[in-house]
Image (tube, rainbow, N blue to C red; front, side):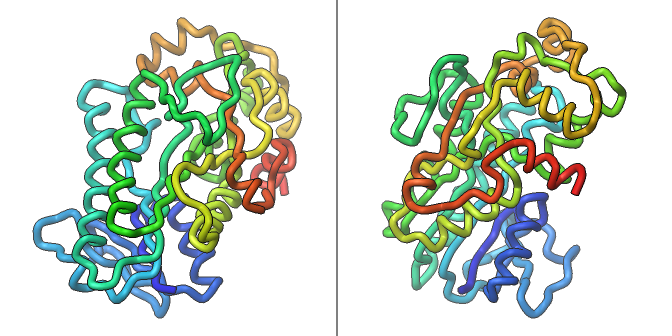
Length: 301
């Protein structure tokens, strides 16, 4: 297959690209700076999101598009400018993908668009599946609603469209390296009350769920990209401490995290219990359904 990947130079994008080329696919990575990269037999870098680039003219007939582009949520304090950048980066990337689809003589079979469990808002008592249609009412939920609304336009163009709502992605990069710092310093503990849910997923299953959504023709709409067993922060932290052979004992008060991080503290203090009902019902088998083996594979093995 010919597969387009946006965000292909990032943490998840690189893992996905490697998996796709191992399957024998040809990958076209859309980037603002194609000159900074070198093409290979199976990877071609194509310029986009700048006026001088016309990717629809450079791409061959495409079978699938995976849209992972979007500014990181945890790279700086959430000022109003930062919030606009978080929103606009996702909207602009998705609109750029739609432009390629609209101008393609032959439409791709599927668009797999990244999304986030932030859609569901915050709750310490509810468990969410894809059957939950009412979004939350906070900033992250609003971002996801607008993001998915743009992606859904691909379905109107006759393209099967799935948006995978990822939880906290665990891997060598991303959030986990920051999580382990307090434990390395022997000061790990609950964040706030510790009762907030953490819906996590191993990066290998992120790649697995994306490729599953590409190939499984019955999947469309929202797909929860989380492991089957979300955990409360206190239990997640205890498991992390056990894997690292470090204590879990010193809580970080909510007021201190809010003072230090501002609105971005919601990433640490708020959460939701999300389960991957659609993926499991369609036959996806998780490589890492449980947290301890997932952490071991990254931090120990």
